[in-house]
Length: 203
Image (tube, rainbow, N blue to C red; front, side, top):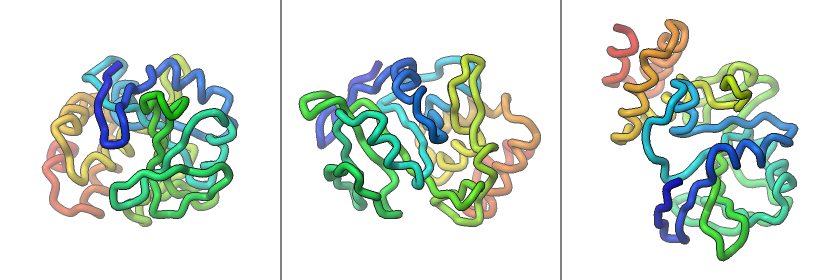
């Protein structure tokens, strides 16, 4: 568990086991995302984490409020402000992140990320041309933990990769299938153009 400071109070990320226990009864699709998704893909811990991310489809956003009704929820309004997310409020399309904690005196524990969909398809909020069937958006660990497919997570990390993103890419690259490499290389070229990861994906 890593505790980090933020302008709106400290982060103390919930352990993965706690997140899984909290979300296990959610009836809508959800996936562990971020660095933990990469670790689930490679089957081992890689680094420390300043937060823990859970991805939901935007259309299912209110289900998480109902899942943990006593928690405090704050929406990350661009550009860089937090505000309370009131019960029953449908967040607009420009809000992608939600911070949550058990109470106002508690550290932040989980970050919820919202992504787009249309019918049976997931649509990247970064570029509407990038999409895939929702049933193919994630995988499951041997323990049954749903996590975002590594090629999708790496697509989000590719835009402005930080050192930890480079570490995640290098760690999971050997585990990617030819199909996963092909998909990721193509969407990076399509949306970002030249990128140093593409050559490594195609080698």
